[in-house]
Image 1: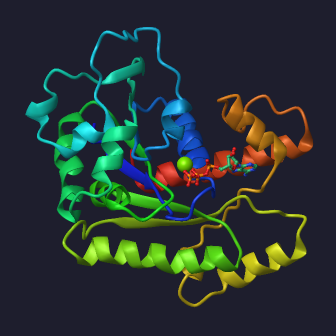
Image 2: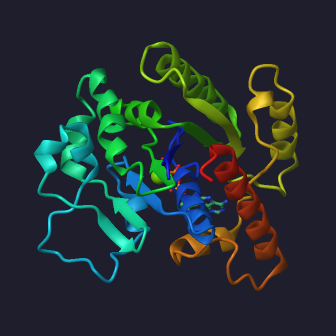
Length: 265
Ligand SMILES: Nc1ncnc2c1ncn2[C@@H]1O[C@H](COP(=O)(O)OP(=O)(O)OP(=O)(O)O)[C@@H](O)[C@H]1O
Ligand SMILES: [Mg+2]
């Protein structure tokens, strides 16, 4: 096993990064891939999506996201939190991540070194990142093999795209992670009933710079999706309506594509 690390990233907030991280993990579990979840967002939504497993012991010290920024010796007394066999999580710890946001950029290089020790235990690691530009986002991109970026349409969102592009370029050319691979950008929370939004998506797909990076999938904005997220279920499970079934197919295809492209198997 050689763990492949996926960062789900876009510095724009509220565009579906955590929802996509969670469902990609569901898809990896369905493929029987031992999967490590890492939450680099101090809001802790990705952590919240995963309740403790049956073996959770509140008296134990579990590895937290901030631990990855220091030498492994410092957290020698901490262990990985397993949710089920082969399924683990490194949760966000608000106070420590808040401090780390202001740490020098060089700190971004630490998690990659730390995570190497888990390389034989997992096939996939999914890192959920904050919806803002900070050292933690840079750290996720620095330790990742590949990045996928959900993106929304609109004036402000497209401006954010240029920022995302810039950060990825900085990470690749600034000596942080020259091998970082962009799997692609994934149109997310698309209102398919809005003709203008659909035209905008068409135009973006034809954009000379960004177009080739837009994945041939789309995650429509739908009530059953929000519900599935709240119920901590894969979007594609338990669909009773046509709309939910369609959404399920969209999400499953997109998640499976990203895992295949990550090359974890
Ligand atoms: N396709 C969708 N249809 C309906 N609701 C969605 C969809 N995708 C995400 N949501 C909802 O939108 C909200 C924001 O999603 P999410 O938290 O995944 O975004 P985020 O990019 O991780 O945000 P942040 O930048 O704050 O971390 C959530 O309430 C989620 O349930
Ligand atoms: Mg999030």
